[in-house]
Image 1 (cartoon, rainbow, N blue to C red):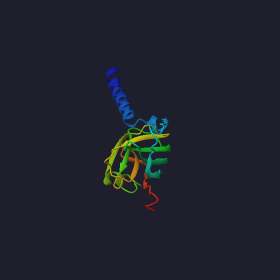
Image 2 (tube, rainbow, N blue to C red):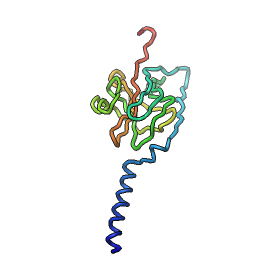
Image 3 (cartoon, rainbow, N blue to C red):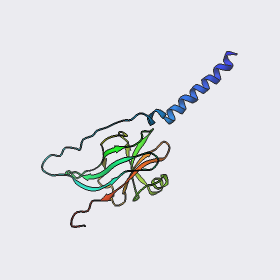
Image 4 (cartoon, one colour):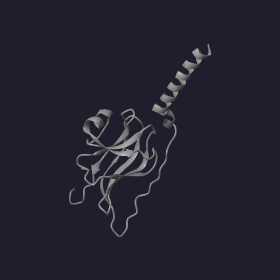
Length: 166
């Protein structure tokens, strides 16, 4: 009789562990705050703002600003300021080849570049961009849950026009 009860208990225990590991529900309640500083610049040169936008919520409340800077050494950086969203399992930052992404399908159909895992769901943070990435093609930033293919929130980016371009 002991074996008949031990096997189902073991199966349930394994199923619960796998379910917990797959969904990581505690991450919905545990925040990870980061405060990355803007990179220091040597010399008198300053960074140039190339594009910026404000996050709007899609599936989870998301807020803050996304700005793309060109640094004096020619590298590009995406910076989040006053950023806040939900935490979750396997959340990444995507540059999306669309003007905005108000749903999940836009991200997957338009194409994207994965910038890596989200560093924290609260706070200022920096992500380096490839120099060859086309800002005319990738015009939105998505906070994307890879595990469940959900768009938490998006920031459509507007190019910064110089006075001669206005």
